[in-house]
Length: 230
Image (cartoon, rainbow, N blue to C red):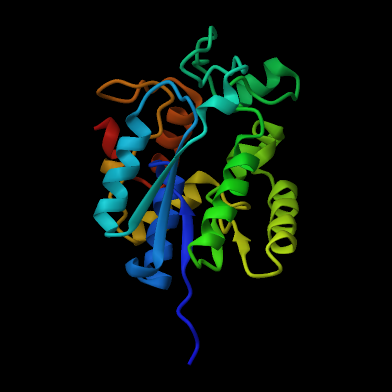
């Protein structure tokens, strides 16, 4: 008899990871999916609150990890202790200003750290796959180099090698846009009203930061309105 596969999903509470969680539940069943939500010293707790709501909606086990100390010396504008303001412009505009360097909201090798931690936890919990929601919009122009296809391939090879082939990394959105992801999520009836993407905290999204702008455009591309902006 073939053993039931278990999957660990990196779950930030945003559009991408929530859609990925929905797909994982459909494929593996809620009892075989674990959502891992990571605190890294971000500016607010809204995304962790959203991750809790999404995990509860799908009835999956949720684990939490706090890695904030690792980024104590970074002045990335996403971090609570940063002296920098979150830019109110698109990723493309920020890229043009930065002349091809990562955007100011890039947290140093954050996703490499997240995936390494997730791999250790997944293997310890008997999972056979780690699911990661990186998508094309995030790595276009190297805005977030730790979301790229090359990065996913390298981390996937390292995880497979480092676990003796017992664990694989899957990033099914890495060549898709956020609009593509929203399309899939709408088909799966993902409760996007429970999610949070804005880099700022507060009662409502700012509608001005790059992730808000990208999210709004993704829903518009699907002929609908972001439920958080209604």
